[in-house]
Amino acid sequence: MPATSGKKLFVGPRFRRIRQQLGLSQTQIAEGLGISPSYVNLIERNQRPVTAQILLRLAETYDLDLRDLATADEDRFFAELNEIFSDPLFRQIDVPKQELRDLAELCPGVTHALQRLYAAYTEARQGETLAAAQMADRDVGTRYEANPVERVRELIEANRNYFPELEQAAENLRDELNVPAEGLYAALAARLREKHSIQTRIMPVDVMRETLRRFDRHRRQLLISELVDPPGRAFQLAFQLGLGECAQALETIIGRAGPLDDAPRRLFRITLGNYFAAAVMMPYPAFLAAAEALNYDIHVLAQRFNSGFEQVCHRLTTLQRPNARGIPFFLLRVDNAGNVSKRFSSGTFPFSKFGGTCPLWNVHSTFDTPDRLLKQVIELSDGTRYFSIAQMVRRPVAPHPLPQPRFAIGLGCEIRHASRLTYAAGMDLEKTEGTPIGVNCRLCERENCAQRAEPPITRTLILDETTRRVSSFAFSNAREL
Image 1 (cartoon, rainbow, N blue to C red):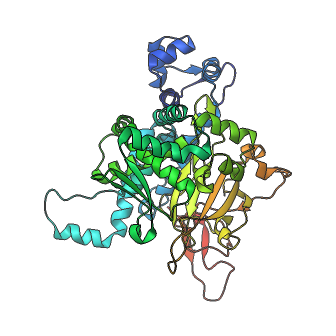
Image 2 (cartoon, rainbow, N blue to C red):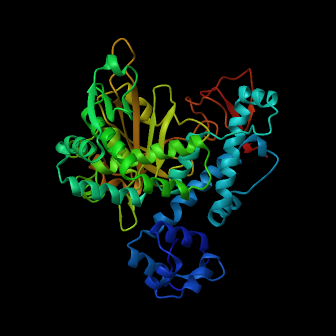
């Protein structure tokens, strides 16, 4: 949302999203900007322009980075729409990229509806067993239920992975406890015992078996496996407290999501409980101040807040308080088979919802270098550059002879933020060549990639028995319509 002096802009949906992110009514933001509530209403309905002066006043009054707030959602929506309309289903429909961008900007509600519809279509198309079951069951009450994991991810993205009610509750709790990070576990256990009559017990693995945490409602006991490390134990206690002490806040947030089936509702509550637990371990003001002072040194932050590497990386993606924002990071967690089990983006990185990740991104290489943190400049096909770090993590320990669970954590940001990271110290970010990657193989149109696993769905596959190329797939330069 550039603010060019004297220029009038019609940016109603973007203005409305900024107001909603600030938690303000039209009357409140009108007072702050010195304009009438009716004018705000007309701006948000695109019936009146917003001047550059009003945008600058908005930025100054609420300490906003308008570029980040205006483009993050739109870029993400555009990337997802582009992925959807690249499907062969739409092969006969030539939708210009500009129309997709206009849709993402002006009609975010329609964009969201299309995303959900396509997600349901994709799962139905892939789920032959489910389709057979639906054909066999003619009960009127039987219906398709979308993937609850994707539904909750959508809700987190809609909130930019920031929930102010939970942040405030976590800060209040830490103020009441008034203990350093190393004393948090004992303080949380005492609060559970004294305020909720819940005893915490660390149990042997032969008793807990495959369970890491279990709350026994009848005996009022919180049982935690001995396999859980100290940061994980504190996290589980904070999670349990969150379910009890923040029940009303949780229901308020869930209620704002609109009608939800039972599975996504339960998963969303669990996710919000996890969010609260992380906020208790790493309170927003102290954590942001430390992150900035340490140039986002994750290992030092983990030591200071008695947290794990993944916990710190995840927490960094939530620093989206309007008047005190951190670097807008994106995060990915994958296993050594490439399965994505966690992804968050508070910036503009275009994660694919319907496929894996690019093998050229060195997050996958961490399994070969388990004790090293890797860094990389990556570049998408549109020229957008990002700086990322990656490291393998083990969690939790598994008893012999079970395989030890391993995951790779990738954390990154747009290249313009990278100079604030200790990991980029000494690098000439402008001259460093970026590794060319794609969102995933099915959407990537880069030619001659030796790592390509499948041809792009937007191009015609060329089959020639007389030639063997570097890539297993050759395809036309012309986009299919």
